[in-house]
Image 1 (spheres, one colour):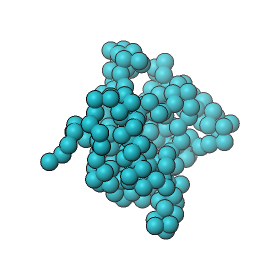
Image 2 (spheres, rainbow, N blue to C red):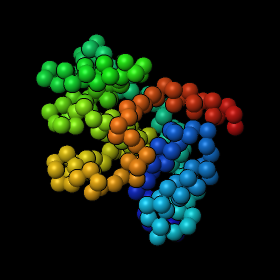
Image 3 (tube, one colour):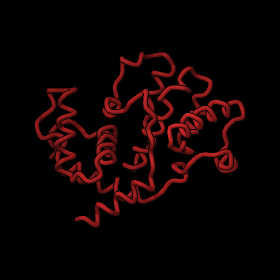
Length: 197
């Protein structure tokens, strides 16, 4: 029987994020880090939670899914519009995000461009929020679950303020920074990691 609270998709997504940030860490290291981070925000959580077995199970799913390269994580350009259309009225915001990325020496992914376009009519189009949502979507793909965007829905609709809600992995995501997801690099890291074992 499981000890402690139910493992939610948000916790599994956090495990995936820690793995992405530290691809050489083994399951016990990720579990220890997760426990430390989660107990900081909720000291009443039981010691040893989440358990090593759930971390190992989640990592197995993540490692399997990271090998499946999603075309949405490829670089965006206007040549990708045939396969991944963006409404013409959103294109100026996407091109601004593209310019910001290129000047920083990183590529805008199709997934990121999609979220910039979707939020282009809001005040958040030129913030880090589209990139955080893109990262959330990606992390949920890694754990093999459908994304849960209720947090963003309530925030974007004005039902909550930014400080009124938390996601387990939002604490480590930077709203000011640009979050880069590169599945090809992740797959290469996975290959190197497996060769070292």
